[in-house]
Amino acid sequence: MSEAARERLTSWGAETAVVLGSGLDSLTDGVESEQRIPYRDFPELPRPSVEGHRGEFVLDTSGGTRVLFAQGRVHLYEGHSAAEVTAGIRLLAACGIKRVILTNAAGALNPAFDPGSWMQISDHLNLTGTTPLFGRPEFLDMTTTYSPLWRARVAKAARAEGVTLHEGVYAGMLGPQYETPAEVRMLRHLGADAVGMSTVLEAIQARALGLEVAGFSCLTNWAAGLGAEPLTHAEVLSSGKTAAATFCRVLRLALSD
Image (cartoon, rainbow, N blue to C red; front, side):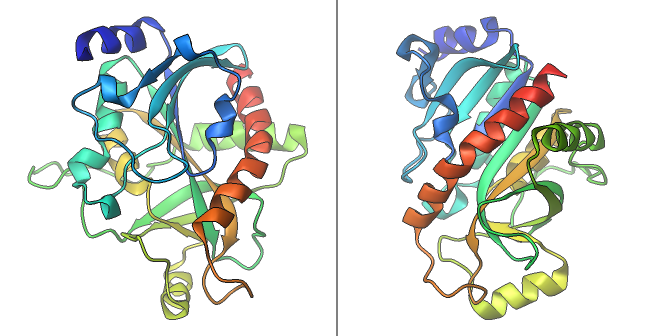
């Protein structure tokens, strides 16, 4: 089934793909089932096991532009390797994608970035302890991992929509446990503004394939020690769903510009 399913992705003709993080799958609500292709149709793709990650590609348009939405991802903490975590990025590139927009749910570290808002990723800290390039002498320049052109374009769209869009550094951790208050203090000292358990490996793989990369964190909660309530995945999913509509407006305008 892989070749037939791959042809469906390729024939859609999209050059932009959006990877949806926890709680953000509502961005594709209303798309008919015939425009959805489950990950199980691709033997090379591992299946997500975390709630909020449906595991399907959605063929849709945004701002008049054809887009491939990847609804859900797998993570290192599910027992996957870095190569498995980034298999979807390699598949998208093989299907003609030129630009990948990575989204995630993250904990806010910067006290000026309130939960419920969005942060555009300007740079990242890969603290997972691995890389999808492991085992190959591939010395990739990561200076401008997150496209300055797309950062400016999306920031302009956010201003036009009256949406607060922070910009900052994302710290990618292994998980699945949330960070301790001591770890949160460490991350702040390292310069991180948000923390999560995804995205950094996908960004590395995408850049190694020559794709343009943009990244956005939905700040669903305060990181440990910065808020009064215990951290739960249910809170992440709920906050992500609420904030998805805001991001959809910004994305639509950015893609139509």
